Length: 424
Image (tube, rainbow, N blue to C red; front, side, top):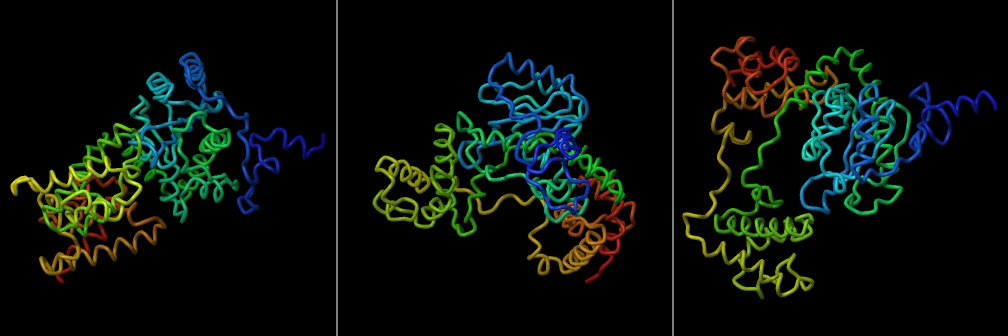
């Protein structure tokens, strides 16, 4: 065996060309196979117990990912969970067959979890009993480090020099059995997560941002589950066209009817009835099935029984007494839309303009997105209702009260103090 062959054989990564590049400037190499081969999917308690024991005995951080069936199934539950840890290898677990992963979650609860875009996966992981105490989010780390593209494929390519095949990201993960190419794709998603985490930690440390990142990660890990959204029907795409309360009632009735059907059939609500059709019916207020059938989204492919159920929803909305019609808009809990500030409070509008410019300039100097430096909502709230004193201590207290982390407060406070003194 040649020296080059020995190097390739000893490499922990299987690619088209052997060991990973030492220099990220080298041409990216496709990562085609998991280094330990494709593991079997865990579908029974006995196999799950073996995985739990292996991961409990492993060392170092654990890479975690989950695949959902967004656009195909109702809700956002996980249909595949992937993990990788040194000493344990890679595990692919089917949550449909093993719906309670509390034991696994407890076995690795004291370990740092490495996720990419953690806030997307944590809700579905929480549903099956997996909640981290400490995490490292490689997507958020990429944002803080100033990378312009922070998708997993782009990060792996730019930071580690490997190309991940991303063609299966939007497939129906509720499919059973899962095709082998999909499983390979899923396994490769956690193959390099810990390597990416280590490289990003070094880069953040070099930039003096590592403590910022840990504050952000701790905030994600300690955040309570989000409250259910009030009046979710108001987020129907195209809702801005609906102005009259009776029409809003039609949107609400159709949305709620669609949601019940989608939940019962376990399919995505959009596959039951599109948002555009809901808005079309609300604007038209059809008096009967014949009129409804003439609208876009209720065409010839829809059967009489389906049309009747949608018309019944419209009729319920049409029959509501005035007092039960929804109110336009939602209760305002914060500042008005910025476009209205110039008329309502010109001085506040001037403060906001100055604050936005200051935050933008600061974010550019720090090489990170403005929304990661400080949320736009926090800036609006401070500018609309500034503290009684515009000194640094008062502004810092206001930012903290709105949930800003310490590093954000330290960076943003001086810029906002200057902006809040603008008189218009």
